[in-house]
Image 1 (cartoon, rainbow, N blue to C red):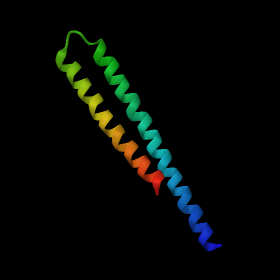
Image 2: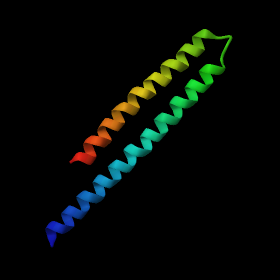
Image 3: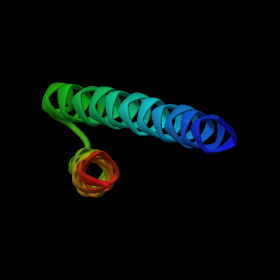
Length: 76
């Protein structure tokens, strides 16, 4: 019975981690879209447009890393 309690706690902890990762993916994707949409609307400041595109690229990389972490968590 003690073992079942430990397994349940481990499952709950794993579920919480997965929820945090899923939420973080959503946040990163939303930021990426916002940066790209904003960059597309900028026509008179190439430097700002490029920085926003770079921010979006950073979000894309973080999103990929978070997805990899989530997949790894789900496999264990």
